Length: 196
Image (cartoon, rainbow, N blue to C red; front, top):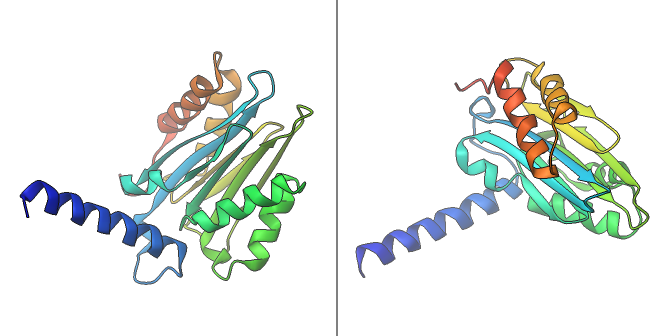
């Protein structure tokens, strides 16, 4: 087997293993090495929702955002695709974003290790938001819910990162993706994750 194909196979196996491991019980991972901050938001005028996140280790960022144009979920600390899909299914069935997250926390045996945020853009243009953080989530965590967004973070150098991200989002102009990026940049100006 050629080197490139072996490397591709190894990378595929690692990606599959990491996704499966993060959906299950967190074992053998030091929570102090994880650090993530994210914003989920919807814009009724643009008729879109989005997620922006930054994380350490870098590969975790690929597991945090989940959604589609009318709903966005950030599954953090120990991300779970199953939880994200359940939140989307519940909002599709008529639950608010908060009710969907609350339900997921009651059925997920590892809810204490989750930090979830969601926004849902309804067909009538209204937006619902939801957020919950498990009891075992990393220190220096924060969360702020607004009318159209949720900001959350864990294992950060300062809990003021969430407030800075909110200000960055609210003061930014431009499209939803531009405002999401402005939020992350505003958070970076006041701190970062505890890993440096």
